[in-house]
Length: 185
Image (cartoon, rainbow, N blue to C red; front, side):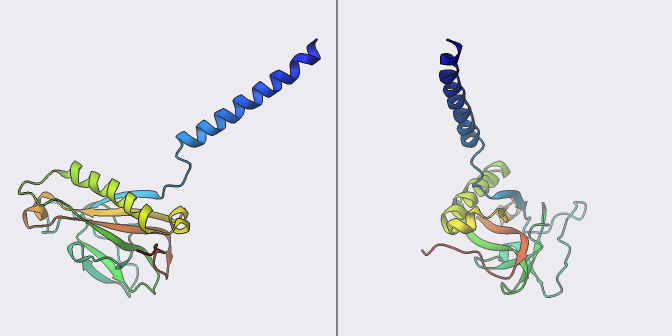
């Protein structure tokens, strides 16, 4: 009698283990999202002298400073992964030289007189840059664990001067000498 019960119990146990594994994979996101290093807030007019400005340390002598407001799609950047918070300039570099960042899209925000707030514009960057990176990068490039993204969004001061753009930057954990592989338009 006992030997007849062990087979159904083994089958039931196996089914439960498989269901638990599937649920873990589903609720953990499956691991296909790029790493996110977060927003980069760029005050387009210089901040007041009392405020702390953190500029990226220039490691590559071939890099040239590029103002955040002057970034364009296709620009490559050195030190993009080290850049955080109130940055006014980036290290621009030729894309055939070692770089760890590339501007892949610019999101135009609705033109309103009143600044919509940091939470709103950073939320647009977070969701918009991730969605556009998924849409624009090839499947292989998007699944590469070396790939991430950052974004630059307007501050209240730059909004007052007409800034309505969120600039999305693909970042690479290891510097590369090639551009991000993108799907054909």
